[in-house]
Image 1 (cartoon, rainbow, N blue to C red):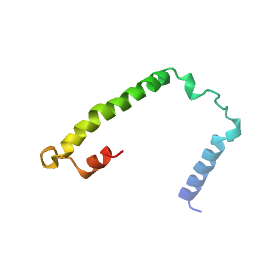
Image 2 (image 1 turned 90 degrees about the vertical axis):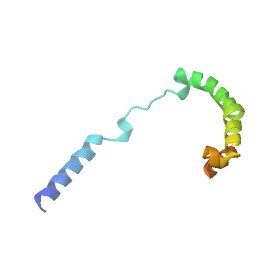
Image 3 (image 1 turned 45 degrees about the vertical axis):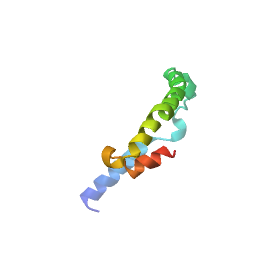
Image 4 (image 1 turned 90 degrees about the horizontal axis):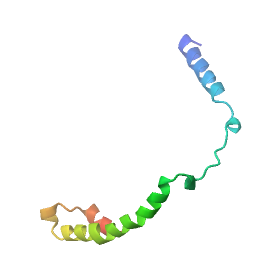
Length: 82
């Protein structure tokens, strides 16, 4: 083997040995509910969904009625169907 291949093999071996066994790592027991700002997001999400249906979709629908003027594309129209 030439020197470069030996060096790469040595670095790969050292990398594998330094990683260690996965079972030695501690397992986190926290849940997603332990993160306080997540409750704020849970409360705000329905508000954003309602605003999307009440404000954004009607504006996009009106804009897509005149695509030459507003630049509405086919993907914008497909977004209305979701």
